[in-house]
Length: 359
Image (cartoon, rainbow, N blue to C red; front, top):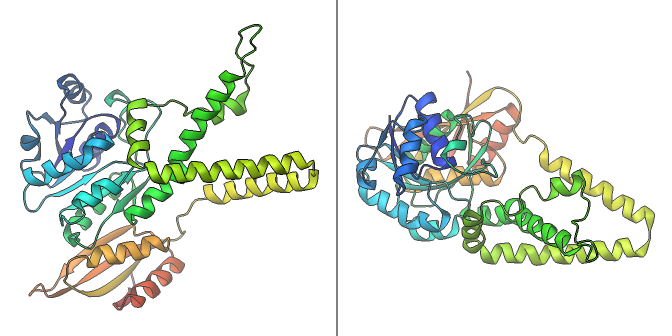
C-alpha cells in the first residue's frame, strides 16, 4: 500500500510511523519545510521525501493532509487534483466546517479528525502508537463514495484507531464543548492568576495541583490554536458565552451559602464527569450484520452517519457489489449482541434489509 502524508508534524509523522510499521506501507512525505521533511525521514516516519505535493500523491491509495487547520481546504483540494481517480483523500483537522463546505461534494474526500495529540508539537514527538484506542471522527457526506470511505475506515482501524462517522456540524459543536472551550478556560485561568499578583511583593501566587491540572493546556501551540479558534469561532464563542452564564449561576449558588445545595452541585458535577469518561465501547465479540442496499452515491455515508449519531460504532466494514453494480451488500461489524441488535433496527429503519450473520 502506498500512502502520502502532506505535512509531517506530530500527527502526520505518527500516521507515517504507524502506517509503515502496522500496514507495511510505503509512505511518501511532503512538507514545505525541507528540514522537517529530512527529520521525518531520519526518524522513519516516511519512506521517502517527495519534492512536490504531486510527486507525493503519485500512485497513492490514501492521502493524509496534515497541515495547519487554515491551510487544509486548499491542501486537500490540491491533493484531490494531483491524486489518481481511485485514491481517497482525508485531512486530520479538528475543525471540519470549512473543509467540508469546500470539498464535501468530492466523492473521494472524507474529512477526518483523530482525537490524539499532545501539548508539544513536531515530528520529533511522533509515535506509532499515538492512535491506539483513539476515536477518529470521519465526516462523510451524501457525495462520499462507499469505496473511498471503506478504504479509509479499514486503514484507520489497522492503525489502532476507532473510526466513527459524524456530521461535520455536529463534530464542530462537540469539539467546541469538549476540546476548544477547555483551552479557552485554561487561558483565562492563567490570566486571572497573574492578575492576582501581590503588588507589594511582585510574587506570583502560590499554586497547587488543582491549578496546575486545570491550566495544563493554557497557551499550548499558539499558531495551531489560533487557527482552531478562528476556524470554529462562532461555535466556540457561543460555548464561551454559555460557560460564562453557567459560572454566573455558580457564583449565585455559592454566594447563597446553602451548604447542602452546593454539596449537591459538587456531587452532580463528579457524576457527570464519571459518565463522560466511561468507556463507550460495547462489550463482547464482533457481530456481523449483512445489509442489502442499492448502489447509489452516499449510501455508505448515510448508514455510517445514522449509526454514529446513535452511538453505535462500526468496528469494521466490507463491501460486496453485485456483478452489474446496480446493488450490493455491506457487512458491518459491531461489538456485542446488544449493539448488533440496535444496529439492525437502525438499518431497517432506513429502509434496508439487514440480517445477522452467525459466525
